[in-house]
Image 1 (tube, helix red, strand yellow):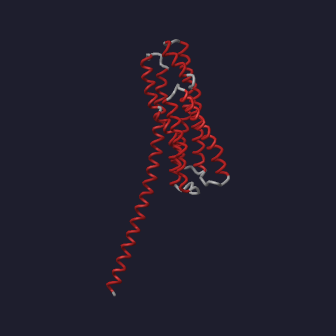
Image 2 (tube, rainbow, N blue to C red):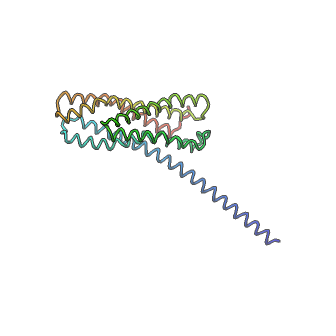
Length: 252
């Protein structure tokens, strides 16, 4: 009888230890997942800002009259490669940020459907990749149009959709989270500004390659870079503010 009683206690202790171990491991998995998304989020911001600075500095060398056409063509190849990082970061930062917020307890209303946020951004990556790899072709123009359309839809969703969901109490997020959404929309707008301010650069650079340097061509190249500079600085400011708000989580 006593033996059975002790054996029962031992089994209960074994069960308790097993449950405790499972809970502990589950908690560790949860923490590791959060650390993964946080690290990924920081990684994206660092590569976005770092690569963007490199691209902008490289563009200053394209307008440097001391550089030969051959040197400028090499710089273009380098810039084209480095520019992939800001483009990819621009796509990833939103869904990764959503995953990070979901891990903090936000968007519990939608449950597992939160993972569907990745699908439109996978399509967006396809559009951007197509617009870059098939630049100058008819399909490249289609991809470029779809890329622009995706950006417009995202900006509209951030400022109209998210605002409606927030002020209608459909989703429950803190003010700093809402501000991060708005900043993302602001960064996308800056991207549009960069895109269209720099639209005259490619034709002028093509003219430079085909006809050689001239005062008129160099002025057009320099004018395009000067037009894009305010938008670039505004985008960098947006990235810095995005990082600051994510770290400080200010209570408005």
